[in-house]
Length: 378
Image 1 (cartoon, rainbow, N blue to C red):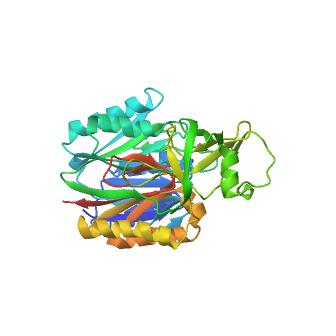
Image 2 (cartoon, rainbow, N blue to C red):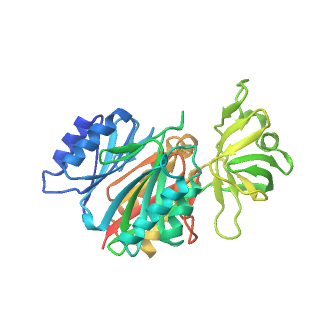
Image 3 (cartoon, one colour):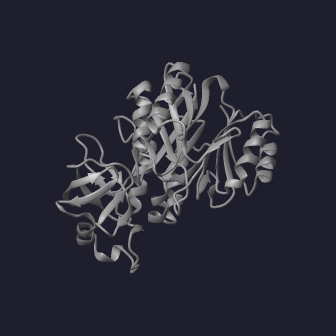
């Protein structure tokens, strides 16, 4: 399978890049498209559809390819994958629940392929993203491969997922692959190091933590991280948080689950984190990110290359938007290091949450991670 990455400031520029990419006889059948300007969606999907190319698309504030970061415009990863080996499904959450939509996608995957794998993106930050995983696994099985990221930008947390001439700002987009024909290997990695003693979540609901060690959540967080973690903003109500110290929820076995801080409710001192948590869970805070964080991520791909996938045709990376603000310029080093593992075309975006496996356990929904996946046609 051949792959090529292209980029452009507009649909017209992407069309020119596409024409140049096929001049040597390359015939792409599938395009991963990540863009910032929503008004470009209809034009770019219409153009790619006319060229006979299936589209897996998501909007984002920041995206990238093996050619570097692209704050504006459109990026695309083109593959000449056999159409018999994949299927794209878009489910809108306005007609069914998140869980029901995911159940349907899992069933479609098993109906079409004996061993399906799922690359997914979803729009609508208000949903419980864990329901996507639960629904997929009901019909596809706990060991199925799932990788992807939530679409959207980090100001209003709004996004759009789209495929050929269809789009939604509240739905699930899935690329279902036949793992008997396509190797799909990857994982979700954090790299953040834990610090301090364990704390206990004593009252919570969904993604909201009300008390920690029986104290109001924000009071305890300020006590351990310092009052300066919140700016001098005197506004009240729901305040966005930019704290680069995600909590690490301990699990019975395997790696910790990362949950970044998102919102602070000044009325009751509760905290919203990037994913559901369970009452009674133990967690530790994280150290500030450094080069070891990047090294851990790159080592994950090198280990997989050595043990499971010596060669790849293409790579997709879904990195948490929080990593961009935490790592700053070092985020490019992380992306470059991952890409250099196989040195093949790559595309991806900074997401509002990631899907993938931390280890040999079931796929889960994460925050502050990099979910990467390498593809190789057998």
